Length: 159
Ligand code: F42
Image (cartoon, rainbow, N blue to C red):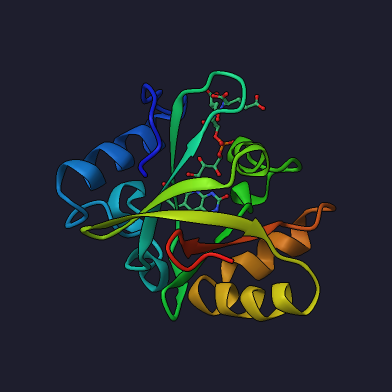
């Protein structure tokens, strides 16, 4: 069941623009890291991005965040790195409050349930995340907080 509510674009112009381009092109444009940021690093420019939709904990509005694509057997991980910021991203708190999300991966949007992972399960997904986006390892070294990881599973199979 898709999340309902009024979409409130991010206060970050780059994020707003990437979401707009991604959705208006059904994921055929803006679906990589360099899609809008114009990332000048050729090794990262083409890395795939997904769009996570969450429900704002305070506003009740629909929020959308481009995140690096980390996928395995139909499940995904989202990594709350926030570019190495000292605090978790705001979408982290939305997920903690309400695990119902939508995830758009290219042309495919699906309803999913998010659960924060810890311990061995987190280690497995963290390795997958770093393989998909090596910069995560650099970002974790940069911050005092442990960067949270959520696993997203299709609502139909979520346990
Ligand atoms: N961020 C990551 O954390 N991980 C990634 O892998 C990642 C990849 C990525 C790729 C491309 C790209 O363009 C951006 C990428 N980002 C990645 C950045 C990501 O999209 C987010 O911008 C970033 O993680 C910060 O998320 P944020 O939720 O903290 O964003 C802030 C700036 C924001 O949008 N704030 C809103 C605002 O209006 O200021 C509020 C958003 C919100 O959810 N508000 C809640 C509500 O109720 O509506 C209130 C929540 C509360 O507790 O106050």
